[in-house]
Image (cartoon, rainbow over all chains, first blue to last red; front, side, top):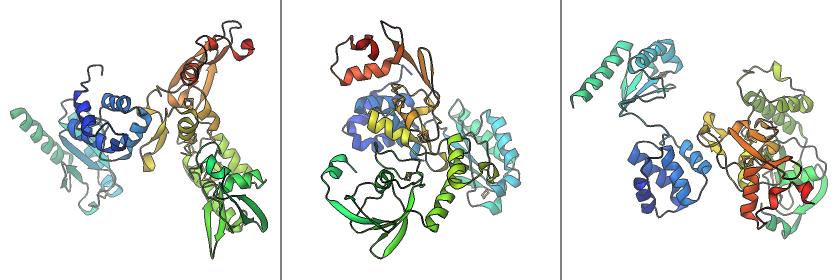
Length: 159
Length: 251
Ligand code: SF4
Ligand code: SF4
Ligand code: FES
Ligand code: FES
């Protein structure tokens, strides 16, 4: 935390004229640059603009587009809505968590995957549903999803 | 509603439950009703901070022109010629429903349960919802508003939204700028901030904050949190050793 490089944040602040009125834009720029909103970055913004960290935290948690935790390159979202749940979404999530060694809401150490859970994505007929990087996979099974995950893993090792 | 505006606002006439009344234009209807002995239930209002209209318990019916509508009174500005009904069947029914919803959110608050029982005859144990959801907070925002508007610190805020909304310290961590004045704990209607003091340490459980207390050089009494005194020192021009003694020994 002490070693956090604030130069990048300073550039973003300068671009936004160090104006409190541009706070939302500043957070958007940090999210774009870092992939998430690192706490030291937010604390630096608070200090530089002379506003409370409480106010910034409030804004940072209000918008879905912001994330306070680092997010992986690949986002795997498991639907846990009622329809998917009764068709075994819980088991699928368990198996994914086992494979990646993280819990839903977390990101792998190598920043390759983030696993999330949502409630009903409106595709109940093809449940259980898993969304991998925006692509809906219907009639999902643990094996099917873990194969997709393993393929991505293998690919990333190659490059 | 700012002080100044009310102070030099013209008086207007209006009617409450059939009685003629007058008050400064655009002042808070709830403040007026409470000051004049109307027994209106409320939870999120404190005349010292801006109205927020969060708990919805202070409902009344107001007729303005031809329209009559149900409205929260704390954030309703008094206007010329309005007619207010504080205790109609509709008002009572809706307040009771609001109370039940508040209980569903924060069933673990003793204060809330007591109020529900005394004012509405609601037995919280008989309501059909989870009783142990670990929540006492009704999101009234008084802690946030008091800390920001009165204390001038803003150590807290609302975070998240929708069902995830909460009144909390930044990052759920220590509220590092909190000076321990305790104003939020006094203002909280559901007593969920957990202000405690053990000899020379004051703690605010909800904000994960522990503060050393300043002890009086003469009598040894731990009389106020250090950070609070530092804050006072910064915003006033008292001499550096002013707070060495407690107010009693200073006399
Ligand atoms: S005790 Fe801390 S959080 Fe509460 S009002 Fe005072 S400064 Fe704000
Ligand atoms: S902690 Fe208390 S004062 Fe703060 S929002 Fe919750 S109920 Fe209101
Ligand atoms: S419950 Fe999964 S898509 Fe509706
Ligand atoms: S006191 Fe009016 S809405 Fe809470």
